[in-house]
Image (cartoon, rainbow, N blue to C red; front, side, top):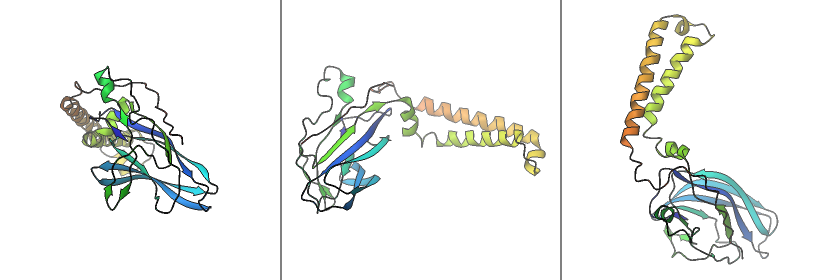
Length: 229
């Protein structure tokens, strides 16, 4: 699944559940891994693995309940080399097919394709989901902005932690050489580190251009997607 055109710094892809159909011809019990990858061209980066213990054929549902912040393109897959499933075509590639009248909504789409990955390369995209269904969506929030810029905010975070550490030194009940000696210096460091934290935070705020971002905090409900055979 792919976020169309541009990835906003505000958006994430929440995945609630993923289900896999095991055909009656498959010998059970068996154990398999359902994997979620981030995709960059033909390169896969494994984000999560969910072991599935199959004791009966039919639908096997995996509770994911995770939000993927940095990813624009995700690949949900399992090893199908020795497993029989069902042919489940997509009803639509586009999860929001009726929103093209508004440019912002046009960008806030997820497109889904079926694919196979063999020998380090993807096969041609199809409308076949290879026995998988999912409940997923596309959402925006300010919390995600912080997650997506965490490297840019790292220095500010270090200064904030230093300031909090000095406050602990000043007000802790523990008695030792660090909490009883030279507390004036600890007070100075607390304020100095707090000032540096604010400076770094303001530098970050001034350097981020969100004026052209198409996705500002919204309360959209997770888009439920079920591909049934």
